[in-house]
Image (cartoon, rainbow, N blue to C red):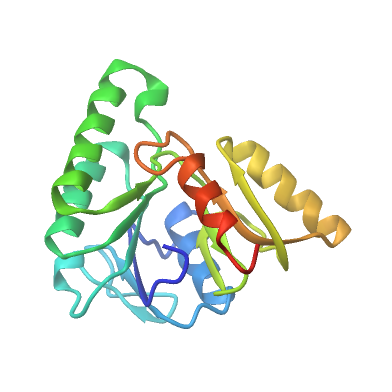
Length: 201
């Protein structure tokens, strides 16, 4: 999850200001050295990268898929990721249990799809994830922290962005930043356990 060799961005966009564009730009600007695959059936290329209609069209293994499509399209995207052998999902999309009963049902289906295919899930309803040592910025935040030794986990995306902006203003570094969101699968327990054994934290 923190050091993937390849990343697909499902719902990648050409339009500046769109979350699907910010994620691609952040991955490229963070210095991430692995393969980045934008997925959007309506585009041929995004930010200079060849664009795919589906994750199923990408040759080779995908360690991580970041999903940023409307909530109603997430289940189909997750299913395709499962069939493609993706190992980890970050579901940025909102519109799940935080909005009520219908969203809760969709979230339960998302979790069961991930379990069926053996994928780990961060989210849904997250800003994303960063690792300054990889380096990797798989988020739509408009800043990337200095390299440091503090891991920062936040359920609240607004709190995460506020602390990130503040940290840059005072020169504080982080090893990892994780937005937990709805915690459909991975929670603070998983990430605290990981941080305890992380030489960079």
